[in-house]
Amino acid sequence: MAIEFIKQISHFKTVKVPIYINVKIQECALNHLNLKDMGQLRDRMEGQMYYNKLRSNIMSEFALENILFKTSFDWDKRMDKSYKRKPYSIEDFKVHLITFNTNNFPKISVAHTNLCIMANATEDSKVYLSGLATKELIKSSGLNIRNDIFEMKSFDKLIPFSTQEDLIEVLNKTV
Image 1: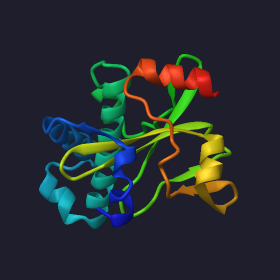
Image 2: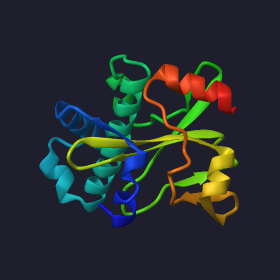
Image 3: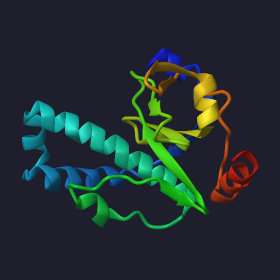
Image 4: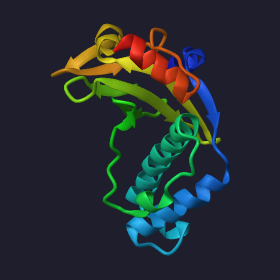
């Protein structure tokens, strides 16, 4: 992990994702790329990059949905190669999930995102979820790198939550 991220890890909630999820993610990747096994996927550089990104996205979605909704993960939607993640609807609020890896800080377009939660999935099946970031927090804590796209390098001002009820309370107070 990048040292800059490790210094701020205390601002994230850690969610341990069950190991069996990796098998399901592999099934999704093989289905999307029309391959027979992971050996074929790993033989292709773009295949391994695709798998790594898909794994990060699915693990992050699984962790957030497990905390917020306590429902079974919808694997059918993820088997669809054309799946595009939509913002999560929590009461009347739309919350975006932004995934990132520890070598790069998350980049967020405030033109398209009002509320978001950032997630980092690790190789050892942990997902680090940030607190809630509002557009104002992103603008004040992030670095404007171009055209209202901000890079978040500081997570200490984000609003923590533990459950859906906590998040709803935070949303109602903040927005």
